[in-house]
Every structure is written in structure tokens, then in C-alpha cells.
Image 1: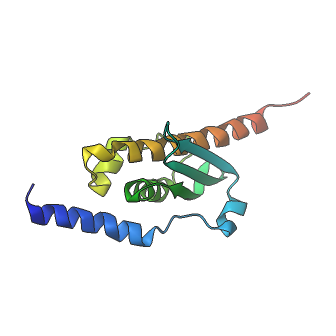
Image 2 (image 1 turned 90 degrees about the vertical axis):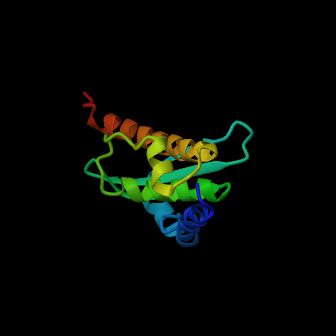
Image 3 (image 1 turned 120 degrees about the vertical axis):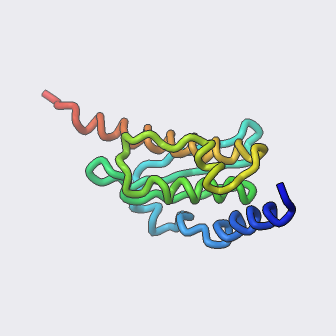
Length: 137
């Protein structure tokens, strides 16, 4: 890869890192009822994703993360991606996140961490929806 291409890839990641529009604040945390978490085995990196679901659609997705820029950017991209989509829709695979962010292969754990947190939040929301649809006699 030419040196100028590496610089532009880093600039793209930097631009998303500087914006982080889907980072959670306390206002959002109160509206979002479903939370999923994922950490690395050593506990060095952590991602939490909050979802607000209305009529089976993800209305709001926000994150909090502790980790390097790739972790934060992967969580940010994933929250942007899933807003407005059906809760039951399959999330993107980590390779899709890596391609969208132009992350090198060594950053695969960042994408995996974000997807794991989203999966946990979706599971929490789906369990809640299932428990609400069970009739009680």
C-alpha cells in the first residue's frame, strides 16, 4: 500500500474518532432500555451499547467504550448502522465494519467487540419482547 493511502486511511478513522456522534450521554441512557456489554479477555477494552426499541425497530443506538480509537470508531459506526433497522435483522459481520472503517486486519478485535456488545443488547431486547408476548392465564 502506498504511503499516501495509509495517511488517507488514518485520516478517515481520525475524522470518525473526532466526531463520535453516537456516543451515549445521560439523556440517551435514560431512554434506552436494553444494554449489551462486551469486554476483551484481559478486560482492557470494553464496549456497552444501549438500544431504544419501538415497534420492533431500533429507534436509538448509543455506545460507551473504553479502548483505542478503533474500538470507539467500530462502536460508533455500528450504532449508526443499526438505527432504524429491525431488531431481528442480522447485524453486520466484523469484516463489514473493518471495510467501512478501512481498519487493518490486526484491528479485527475492535470490530468483534462492537458486534458482541450489539448482539448482547439485541438479545436483551428480544428476551424482553418475548416475555411481553407470552399470555398469562
